[in-house]
Structure formats: C-alpha cells, structure tokens
Length: 142
Length: 278
Image 1 (cartoon, each protein chain N blue to C red):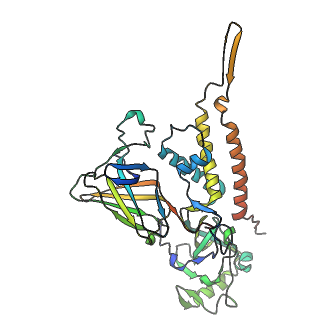
Image 2 (image 1 turned 90 degrees about the horizontal axis):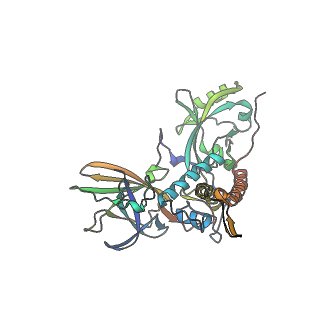
Image 3 (image 1 turned 120 degrees about the vertical axis):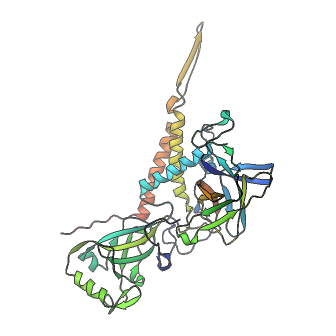
C-alpha cells in the first residue's frame, strides 16, 4: 500500500468537499486545512485512471485501529523551527478526513508536507509533494 | 528539515544583510510583486499551457514535471531554489590569505555564514575565526573576505569563545606555507530567497517554461498525422498540420526566452574568477 494524502477544499460537512492540488495559507492569520488519506495503489474506477504511478483519484484510506494519530511536519531548514502539528478527525462518519489548524505565528514554507500515521504504535510515513502554498505579505523582495 | 552530519548551528550565523533578490536591496515595498510561492500545476497551466489539451496528465504528474524542472533549473544555473547549507573545505593560498583571506566558495548566492574554522584533516577544530571579521559584501557572488577588526589576527585568537593564543601561533606558522589543501572549513547557507518556498518570479518563469517545454514535447508526439487529403471526381480537399512538430515553434520560442533569462540570472549571482599559483 502506498499511503499518501489529498488536500481538500471547500469542506462544509462530511458529504460536501472538493479535492484540491494544494492547501493555501495566508501569512498573518490563522489557517486550517483538511486532507484525506488515500491509497495510491487502488483506483476504484479504471476508466478515470490516467496514471499508474500518481493517480488523480485513488481510493480513500480509513485507518483502522484502537489509537490513530496523524502528525504533520512542515519542514524548515533549521529543524528546530519545524512546525509539527497533530491532525484531528473532524467527522465521525468519515475517518479518512483529517483537519490541521495553524496559528498566526505558525507560518510554514511553501512546498511539501511530511506525514506520520501511527496506528496502534505502528508508524507509516508519507510525503505530500507541493502540498501547501503560503501567501506572504512581503512580496517586494525575498 | 535539516538532515546532515552535524548541527547546522544557525544561532551564530553572519547574515548577508540585504535581500537576495533584488540583489543588495535594503528596503522594498509590496507595490510590485517580485517574489511568489513555488510554481503550482494551476499556474503552470494558466501561464504556459493555455488551450493545450493535457488531460492525459494527472495533477500529481504535473507536480512531478514541476519538480523535474526545478531540479533541471538547479543543475543549469548552479543555484539553489530552496535554501541549502553547505560545508566546504577551502585550501590555504598565501596570496589570497594576504588579500584579506579572499575565499571563493562553490555555491551561492550566500545568505549566511555559520562558521569558518581552521580544521585539521582529522576534523579537529584548531581555530574558529570570529564572525565579526567576516565581510559579506560580495556574498551574493560567492566571495567572502576576512577583515580583522584588530590590527593583526588578534592579540589573542578566539577558540570556542575563549581567548587563546594557540590559534594565533598556528596562523603565523602557516604563513610560511604557500599553499595548503583543505585548510579552512566553511559552513554556509545558500538559496535564492531568505524565505524557503518563495522564489523570485523570474525563477518560477524559468521553471515553468522548462516544465512546459517537456510537456509540449511529449504532447506533440501524439499528433502522428501531418496531412490528409481526399478527392473524388476531380473535387479534392486537403489539410495539413504540424504533425509531430505542432508545438515546435512554441517550444523554440520558450527555449530562446528561457536561455536568455538564465544568462541574465547567472550574471547576477555569478562572478568569473581567474586564480592561479605561479
């Protein structure tokens, strides 16, 4: 199984959300985003499979276990400044969807997000490429 | 996340002091957007692939094309899209030593110097040069110098923050050598932006064009029919397309523009050096 995550947007309730390519965060304010765990090895509908390696619509993955924790790391060059957040499962009826909240002081860098899913003490890791775009307030120079 | 052999030690960094881009900019406003987040599939399609049918590419594959283009960019320009800390061994050259310890580093543009050590071949720290002496004026061109605040390299050298004469004696001893290999160890951070994940817009432009050229090149190979005609009873009709070269003009235009921008970008962050021992 190749575990990964798909970013969600416009999440209203367990039955109303859309897939997104990346999450957007704005510097200077609190941000929250949702992601759904997926299994890249399973694509339910063969007719929409447009890639074996990186399918657009892989099957969602619901972690099954007594204790389930998803930890997301927003990496920084100085590892002391890494932002590490524990995601919550906002919907009881869909345990594949997780939510992460960032405070206004927690400004990640645009790029990839590392994930660690722990089910009953067993860890699984994954990397969501180009997962978050951070809109900065200072754009005249970098 | 830093992954390496030792502590990156950002607490004692000596910073370049100004923005990386625009080069040597001290104060900027946000009236003109010069920097933006890393390229996304939406931006790639919007800027470079409008009206091109790429439905056989999944969004994840477009992300992968962007990643490939970023790596290609780093190789072509010898610049780092995101910040990287390097650890480099520099030889001792007496002429460069006399020129305020002129050092030319392999990577750039340099954001900060974490430490400059005189390190033995077995990794022992003999002497740590004070950060106050490091001049970062040309760090964006990979050049650093040491301008000692004291009249010579200190009445006492500094080793791990404690006054010590041991380093001074050592430095005066090596002055008798003309050249020593792998003498200094410099730990420094390079990148095109002080804020990882944000890059100059023209860097995104080069990356986007590179990715688009690869995609268009793949895409045009599907147009296997270049011309067709039909005739009956003296009436005929024919049509022709570019065939497998249908996007070739667009690709060549992008390539020419990209190469021009790479040249301009390199001129901002590179400098040609001619050094030799005679």
